[in-house]
Image 1 (cartoon, one colour):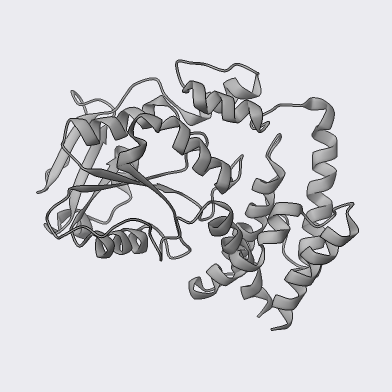
Image 2 (cartoon, one colour):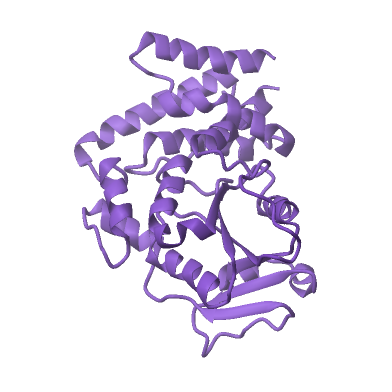
Amino acid sequence: MKTWLLAYLSLTLLLSVAYSSSPSKLEGATLPEGSKKIAFYPGSFDPPHKGHAHIVDTILNEFGFDKVVVAVNTRPPKNYMVSIADRVELVKRQFGKNIDKIEIVIEPPEGKDFLKKTIQQKYQTTVWSAVGSDGWAGIPQKIRDDAANKWIYITRDAGSEALPKVANIHTFKGPVGYSSTKVRKQLLGSHYSNKDLSAATIKYIKDNNLYIANQQTLHINKANFIKEWKHFQYVYNFTDLPPPEFKDFQQPKAWRENFVRHAILKQQIPTNQAQKLWDSSRSFIKHGGISSNANCYKAVRNTMVNFVSE
């Protein structure tokens, strides 16, 4: 039960903190079958950049889609620099040009396939999946060849890349020179590039102190990371579970989310328990486990302990 608890904790926090876009309860009016063309575009968006925005713009305007459902990834083993809630906010700002034609959702513990089916049920139509060459390589051949599936394939080089030969596919060359890894390195060097990020995205990053490389506080962050991990272990009795990776300059909320993600993966917590774990970890992710505010600490600990004892 304590193993399940951790997973339950993490996912709750993710979904609640990152808006009401819970995949099991998508917002918006249901559309009559066949009346709209819907695309599904998942990604880490850590951070989202103009290359991502260009892809959405192409899907909407060149291929005539009515809506793009943008899914923010949450599942292990990836470790993100900023929280789910902040990545949702960054997507809203980076895709602002088409904000009325996108829907932002959060990947649930069940994964992207489950989320896509939920979206199809909501809109009562087949949803097209946007995927790059790396993502395509990981899709089983049986699923690729299934004529019921529809694809938007984003190439790196339309001239030399072998394009998929399947039915129901749109293909276009993705924008060149964009990379979230590159953008993170630039931001950590206090370089805010209008070439890569919109003005609204840059403002949100600055206002919320995201992707900041502060060498003076790095040792404090490492110490806090260790203290919070030990607190997390103690409350959930994960005494034999080694800590996850510490990433320099990672946002505290992001490393707490990763505690939950790490525990779900390593403790093999069942998917049907993960949502409950996320929900019950909301306070811990928001406030941490070593708050100097006694009342805040008590509330966080009570929430976690109460779940463990259920």
